[in-house]
Image 1 (tube, rainbow, N blue to C red):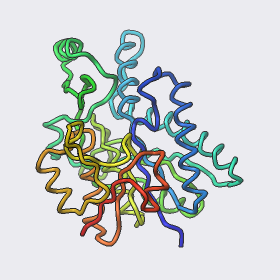
Image 2 (cartoon, rainbow, N blue to C red; image 1 turned 180 degrees about the horizontal axis):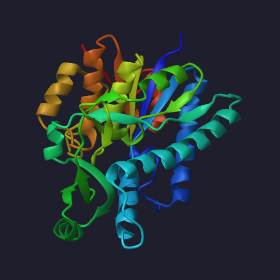
Image 3 (cartoon, rainbow, N blue to C red; image 1 turned 135 degrees about the horizontal axis):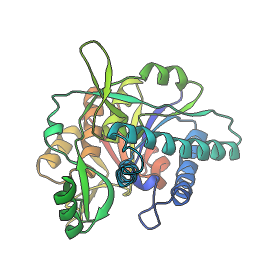
Image 4 (cartoon, rainbow, N blue to C red; image 1 turned 90 degrees about the vertical axis):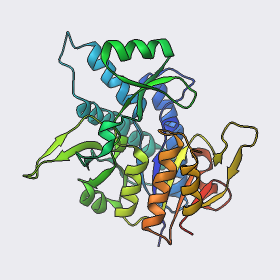
Length: 314
């Protein structure tokens, strides 16, 4: 049987930090990304795609708030849904083309996905998830004062707005993903899914948060019984002592080793930390399976055991 892989795409797979954030520039990056996903499919892997939306949802929100005197600003959950729609559109268009070039006629579908979160999640009291563009320290202070935003420095790259990032507890559209799996490449849980709260009578209500796409991908991988969770980012391997003279790139981590590195503060919150934590969660729930963290370009090599950081339970 074909190996089932849930692929989590990082921001660099959707948008280059070196080019403008126009739709055209983003589509060019997505086309290259989809070549790599099509390679996975061509190798015989069954794939579902989860993606982030931090820069995109921040810009949609910014545009909405800037135009509030002309047209009503949209709430955060609606902005998240908009980002799922346009990123999914880019991915499914580019992936269909990349598959067709390889002679593969596989449908690609974007499924707008809601994620139930817990109202009591401590994340609502401690915003950590970076969204939107980077700012200087002076700009960040001004936004904090004028708009009441929570602003934090993001891994040495500049300042960004941060919002709550609760842990997802249930994928609302999971049954649809399972029904589509055998025949279709599904793009789902985009941007981590639209965060919703479940009321006592079973209604769903959107809430202002961004779910980390790595935790969303982990929950999906558990629920579809994937063989591997693959988190794709900018680096080929996870490192400890990152950006220091004694930096060490890791080819393998057990759950216990990863837990110790997290406790030692080796991984940046909102950056590498949630990736490692999601990988740990997956292998703890599935001790006979693996999670992989690597770069987009090295995805197949990592699945074949040639590179990347492999996380196993023992």
